[in-house]
Length: 237
Image (cartoon, rainbow, N blue to C red; front, side):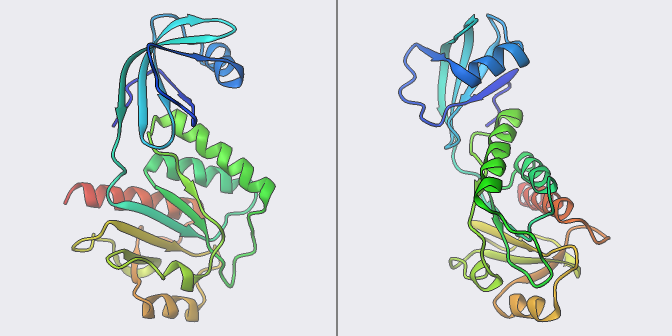
């Protein structure tokens, strides 16, 4: 689903739309003062759970009054693309969340690795959640990128039957889709690379080593490349 609207707003507790949706507070101020929406323009109201209400601006002032034109619900993307990665340093983690959301990833889970030093504490997680919301509004995606809790390689490889497990490694084969699968889960290591025993453990647990480019990449670059290549490869099947 594509909203094809000039601006999108995020309203997670969106109830029955009725004839008009009225917004106040930060969302209304941002739409009016920053995005400069005007009466007559179209705005998509997204709840992050697949619902997309297309509206027309009736009033743009202290409050934003939106006249409902249509109310749709998008099915969850298929396959579901999950990225389990080491956490990039500093603000690069926010950059990664922004770009993988735009690239079509469905979930991100921080992965504990031998050479990874970064963790995601509560205040950092709050910021990453805000980045995910802003990315949703920027690109008009109906489903909000999910952020998981830090996990291990063993837990990452403990996927439901039928899930496609991939460990990103420049020495692997070029990625091609599996014969079937509702979930594609890609494991991406830290900038220091996988330790040999980590790579071997993931492969022993069912992961396939695949490359998503000819060179060694930063974590956020590899994550964006993996999400894009997986989505494109499955879309061309």
